[in-house]
Image (cartoon, rainbow, N blue to C red; front, side, top):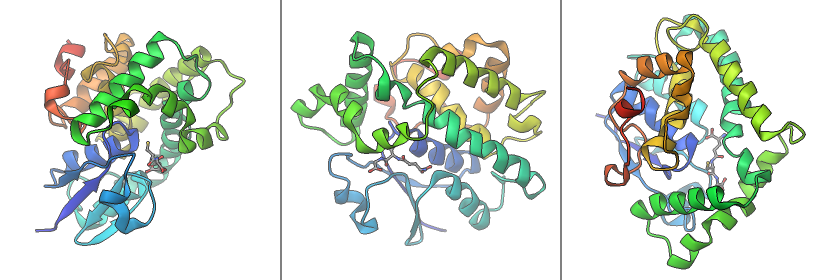
Length: 255
Ligand SMILES: N[C@@H](CCC(=O)N[C@@H](CS)C(=O)NCC(=O)O)C(=O)O
C-alpha cells in the first residue's frame, strides 16, 4: 500500500480541495497539520511555504489541481478528471482556480475591518490553533495578520477590485449555476470530478465550523440540490478541520 500524506492547514481552501480528492477516491492518507507561523517544522523538506503539499511514497508535489491528475495516475479508480471530459474539465477548472477560489480571499484584501471580519479572523485562528497551537497574541492579531499576509496581497493582482464585493459574489454564484447547468455535476457531467470537490468543501466549511450561521449557498435551489448530490460522495466531515470544533452538520445545512 502506498504511503500518502497531505500537509496543510484546514483553513486553506486549496488544502480542503486536495483533502476531498483523497476522500472521494477512498485513499487511506495521513493529514499532517502545518503551522502557518512555522511551516518549516513540517514542510521544511520542500524549502518553501505553500500548502497543500501532497507526498506519496516519498515524492512530493505542490498545486491542488495537479494533485488531482497525479492521484488519477497512481489511483485510477474513480477518476477526478475522466479522459473523455478532460478538455471541458480543464476549462472549468481555470474558472474554479482563477475566479471562484480567488474570490474567497477578496474580503481580506479590501473589505472593511469590521466586527464580522474580526470574528471570522478569530475563529480561523481558533480552528488553526486546535491542530497547531498558536501563541495567544498571534490569535488576537489574526484578523490584522490576514490583511497583511503576502500571499493574499499577491492575489489582489489577479482580481478586478473595481467590481464591488456584492456584485462579485452575485456574478460568481450565477457563473456557478451556469457551470452546474443541467447537472447532475459540474460541467453537466454525469459523475463528480475534481471540479465538484474543489468547490464543495468551500461552500460548507464556514457553516460547519462556525463562520456563518446559515448555509448561505443553500439559499439557491440549484446550488442546494448540487450540494446534496456531491455530499453523498464524501464523509460527514470532509474538511480536515477537527470534529470537536464542528458547530453544524452538512445534513442540517441542507435539510
Ligand atoms: N495554486 C495553489 C495555491 C495554494 C495557496 O495559495 N496556498 C496558500 C494557503 S491558502 C499558502 O500556502 N500560502 C502561504 C504561502 O504561500 O507561503 C494550489 O492550488 O495549491
